[in-house]
Length: 293
View 1 (cartoon, one colour):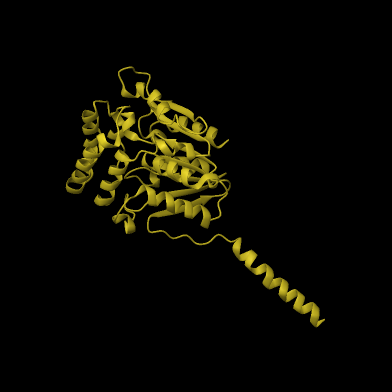
View 2: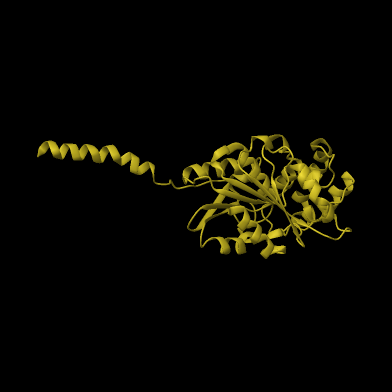
């Protein structure tokens, strides 16, 4: 009898660490905040520069009855306390923290959808995390945004403009953001349209916004695309009107993603500008359904 008691006791202690290991750990970050809702396969939604999860409201409402939706906030955007994003880079640390989040919450190859700067973060996460990411959708995002304005642009071309933009936001605040697309287009000799011009700013900490725009203008991830193993879908606003800059953007997006290991799936959405999920919600939701199927 006593022997049986010790056998049972030993078994309890042997399996206790296993049971503990299967429980997702709490996640806290000084770079991002993540809100979770719904139940089912995991989908991570990342907003863009100066945006909050509010831009994903309709998308999340459509997904959370059959998916677990992870809504990401970048600290310093909107009214989210800035914390560590008051200093240094924004996108790289956010991607690192999202990878840590996937590990801490024991997510199994989640789908990741990122808009604008959030698309840059999604691409960096996919390149860093390998098979930890199941699939990626970037929404009106490019691995090098200036190439959508002027295909031959380099980081060296853009960096002086980006420094001016950085200083303008520090001194002028959100209002300066609305003028940067025009300045970029004029400086590079291309049409900047709403890729930079109508981003629907929700504001935030000036320093974080300034750093974020600097990174959007100067980050070139094209060399990292071959490291991405997850399937990539690229969604972007498009126009049938030949007079619109959006009429010419299709080939620019396709060229930007040419170095992926596996060809991307491209989803141009007619009638949408930069805020695709808001401009054409029904068409965008159909694209998301195809992406997740």
